[in-house]
Image (cartoon, rainbow, N blue to C red; front, side, top):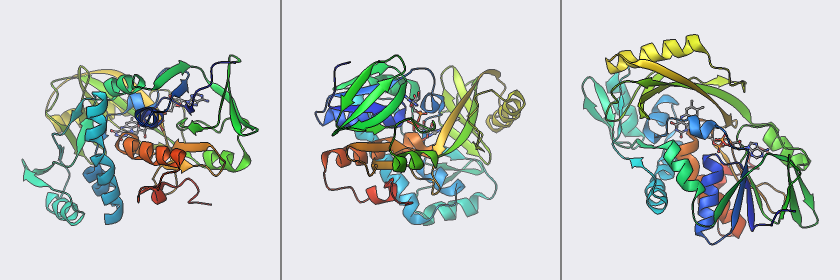
Length: 336
Ligand SMILES: Cc1cc2nc3c(=O)[nH]c(=O)nc-3n(C[C@H](O)[C@H](O)[C@H](O)COP(=O)(O)OP(=O)(O)OC[C@H]3O[C@@H](n4cnc5c(N)ncnc54)[C@H](O)[C@@H]3O)c2cc1C
């Protein structure tokens, strides 16, 4: 039997690692179990985009405000863990900027007309690769390689079994396994919650070209600064979990992105990830209904934006603290 930590987090994506880092900062000894390899969090463009998401998804004001509060948690997290956070805003290059400006302002976002489009100072960006590495090294956190094949209650503890036969026990487990199907051994109620998560495949393409100062978005395409140039994305393909790159779709996206930039560039690797989503588009964060088992799942296409909020809500649930006002909107049992 491997040594037994205070809290076990299953999954080292942004939700698992933000939660582990938050718990580590609160003095817990946390072990994160993950098989390694790319996940949705590593594929993502890293946009923290409450304004653009609210505009594109036509969100109501209370949801827009929640996204903005989630973003507001980032500066402290970035400072604590040395993450590269860019607060340069983002550019919108869609049709009808006057309408977009009015809608954004009505939702409480700043927006400035610029070059026939808009600049949105409320949208920021985080460097995903550097952030995942730094969060995995947060105080109190250790990451071990392994795929959990069975998670079951045993007395007052949870038994966490890896594919290679290692077993951990802990009274507190956080399930942050992304869009993966339910792990064997879970109680029926939790298994049903996990099984209700809709996988949404997404792909983007790295392109070697001069990076713009900040993210540029238009309907159906964005260009974000990335390693060696930019990333151009991204698709939303509900119901798909396969990771096979779609070369024709990538070519279409790259052409649209380069047209937006007014530049040429050389397409590099196509990156594919699968996001998990709930029926209302918000994550599942907090107690699962089973003592000691907590969820940090299904942030749809805003996993980076929502990471620190999910982490706080889950950590508060574990410690039995009074929940944040936003915790109710993320309650894993809200669909029951
Ligand atoms: C192309 C694309 C672009 C995106 N751009 C953005 C963006 O700009 N901004 C933004 O906010 N969001 C963006 N997203 C969404 C964001 O990436 C996701 O919402 C987020 O990464 C989900 O994080 P997660 O931790 O839930 O899941 P994941 O990142 O998928 O992590 C889950 C982890 O759990 C592990 N795991 C699964 N099962 C087990 C098991 N049985 N045992 C152990 N470990 C297990 C997996 O290996 C994985 O590492 C994008 C997504 C895609 C695909």
